[in-house]
Each structure stands twice: as structure tokens, then as C-alpha cells.
Image (cartoon, rainbow, N blue to C red; front, side, top):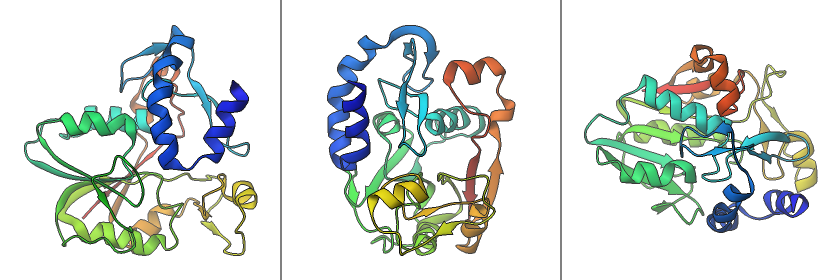
Length: 256
């Protein structure tokens, strides 16, 4: 079973994985029934979480069997709950790029949100477009989420500029990416084209770059103000263990 799970996770296209996940979530919680870990998003408890990631960036006990949250999703949820008015401010206009399933249904149900999702291929997205050329007018959204997308696109700076363009003045957002904290600069090599080599160099078969510590500078180059928030420092030790959150998980909060 573990081999099948790992193969599907690392080889199936994302739209197909999204569809299969709705079937998987039916029986996985039964297999992992317990009370050692907890997901703050779905509020389900398990004896452990699932493993996740390629051979290069594999992590044990991180993926919620029910709503498929990872560490970054659980940190983001806690931050939104504790540090923002995202769940209370009325008529908040939100654009969510590549919407994560764990958030999608919950955000759609929030009556205070005018919530729109966008992606090139995702079957759960409202709008389908290329992030390099977003077919929307300027200054539209008060909040923009775009997580773990920029490592996939050809021209990340252009995509960042497009998101900056459609954000309202005074707006804010969260834009996470995988980061190799041992690197000071982002690693790109366009001669690396095979899935095997991309996984080896960029941590995943469909990544085209591996960000270093200069990631915030790239966001600033696109026009954003950037705050690197180490929200995990404010959480007690038992929360890390219970929610399986690494202390290295920081948030990149952008604003206009």
C-alpha cells in the first residue's frame, strides 16, 4: 500500500490527484484512527499523519489523511485565525491561486468572503488562466493567496508582477514556496529538463527552480512589500508536536 501511495503521489498529474483524493479521504482516516496528532483545519485526530514528498524531500508524519493539510497549511490556518481579520471582515474580496483542497470548501462557505479561485488546470478552480497573463483588471483583490506555485512557472517575476497588479492598494497576501535555507540565492538551470533531474536538483519532478533565502527580494522586485513572519515562535511546544509543525516554517506576507 505504501509503495502504491508513493507512486501515485509522485507520478500522477495534479488534477488527477485532486480527484482521487476525494476517494482516498473516505478510508484513510479509518486506517490511521488514533489521538496522537491533530489537524487544526479539519479538527480530526489520528495516530499519525501520512508521509509526503519525493525521495529527495521526503517527510514522515506530515500529511493529514482527511483534508490533506501539510505543515504549511496548518501554520497558515493558525496565522489567519490568530493574527488576521480574514474570518470576520465583511465583503472581503479574495483571489486564491491554485486553491488547496483543505481550504477551498471552508473558504467557499464563509459568508464574509467574495472568494474566487484561479488555476491553469485545477478542476476545483473557478477561473482557468495562465498566471503569466492574468485576464483580470487591475486593483481588484484585497487578499491574494498563492502557495507553492512559483517554483512551477517559467517566469516567476512576471507572475509575481501580475499578482501585484490585481491586488488592491492596501491589500495583502500569503505567497509560500519551498525554500532551501542552505542557499543564499535561488537556483535555476534551464538545461535541466527531465523529471528525474528536476527532482534531484529542485526537489520535485515538476519544479523548475529551487528558492534560496533571497526569495523575499524577488517578491520585492515585483513591487510587493514583504514581511517574513516566523509565526511558529509564538506557538507552544505542544502545538508543534500535536499539529506536526516544523519550527523552520515561516510565512511570507506580501502587501501593496
